[in-house]
Image (cartoon, rainbow, N blue to C red; front, side, top):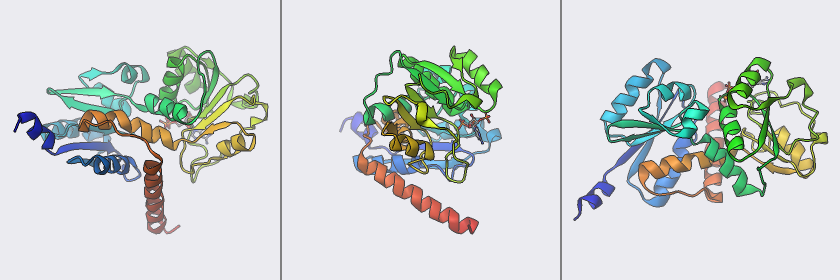
Length: 291
Ligand code: ATR
């Protein structure tokens, strides 16, 4: 038996670190693919307070983990803890995927990839030379702006807190639209919400899509609910509309491939399975919170 075969049989362990972590659907996604591919691997979620991130990463590497995901609130801090970074991680300024290799920590960011794959797998849209409006200026917005610019779009940012929009715009070399002028959409080809507005339990995003051209594409990174008020409006106008769940699913693909050695696919069955997991999680919370 070759040593390679023995190696491929060894249990491969990956992780996700966040605080809180209970909400994460990543264990459901990777668990689905591990079962589907019959891989002897694991993907565990750990709740890690910020002060323990560096120690935890060192410990997991020493214990033979192959890598894992980093989520809120650690994505920016993880950047400093990597020996090497991908261009995406460096330019976005955040790491969501870690690979331990040859004693080094390699940091990547697959959020921009996931965002773009979600759109192109659902709709036909040529980004080159198009005008995109990004709502929000947080961490998710940075990945989306990076992806849109890479695809050749001209990007405008609108954010409730103007200084944050201006800072991000300066950083990426894009324009700013006043948060109070969200009805001026007649030259916008692509509209994306990266704020938490519209999420279950949050206020809806207050925007009127009437002025948006009929060829425009609207997408939301919020996936709970799947059809946010924003997407409902877009659907009512028969605009191209893409929900946010696919971004979460697609961003997981490169990490799984690197850790477990097989390129997984985002299929309707995976979507259903993750949606079921989300529902089950919500029922648990409702009982716990007594809502
Ligand atoms: P993430 O990393 O997930 O993007 P974040 O950094 O907390 O999270 O950013 C959240 C985004 O949602 C921000 O753009 C935030 O606007 P501010 O910068 O003004 O805070 C936006 N957001 C959250 N609640 C909002 C609300 N009630 N109205 C408008 N924007 C809101």
